[in-house]
Image (cartoon, rainbow, N blue to C red):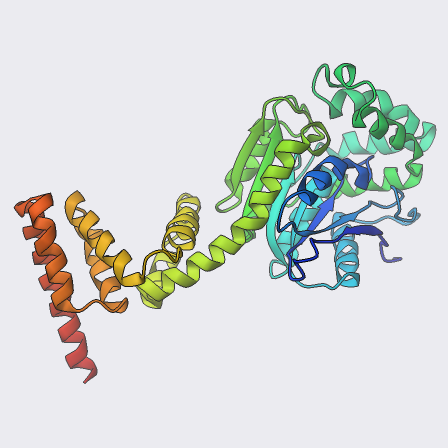
Length: 392
């Protein structure tokens, strides 16, 4: 089989962002990289914007037409080839509909390359094999012009085309007529064979699933079910969009993508700080206990508590330990206090200083809370003494 060849176009980062992350954007069936024009314009206006690579599907836009069949996995390999042509490495990926399916395939097959996954109006399986076979036969018989009316109904929320008569929606429908008929049909057949529902648990990239409230194809219910299947995935529903969210709501799309690109950096920083403060053994135990139900909460802790608050330079680690210990004594949170006594020792506070924090907090939090904290402190220090003797 001839390799699936795709073409893309780059939007460079700001001149001061030579090491900016790469964001790969993939369009839906029947659209081109122009689907992302509004999103790219908004991202390009941001400070610290990412490098952006947009890739066209076969026979769409700049990509050559296809005459041999291909799979969604072939399309994913074609995207990787384009990424490698512009420098390779790890990247963030987002796609709408078929583009989202290709993005999911990448997240499953090359997890070491995918820094974050965003799927707009997509799925691990989309539609039915029979429906896609009928669509392919229609286009082969009557061309892509024959699916314009149906696409207008599926793609846009009610009233969108009427309120934007000269907007990007109309241009997208005109572009659909220019898509290569056979390539479109082959994309339909690739979607008919695509089913990754059994593999969602293996997605490790931070994931965002975005649904349009008016989407009758990949409905909000289906998108929420998809999010539930991906560990730690976040689900968002936009009220005024249907199936082409990047085109219909570029403001929200750009904001969501900007947060998705920034999020893994906070997660990486948070994991580093968390290990430095709490120790590898504690973090490894916490990670080993993660379940699909607790994954999002653990990600929240890592990014916000450790990647943002604990990583701020305005207080030293020792000062943050003092504030944390005092807060935990006040709240009577003995389990967390136990953990943060160990963290305070790692951060350089002496045993005497930790005891003084509890003594001082007793004045404001009350003697019962401080008395309980002192008992926990005694136990933790005894455990530390025992460990030192065993290691000696």
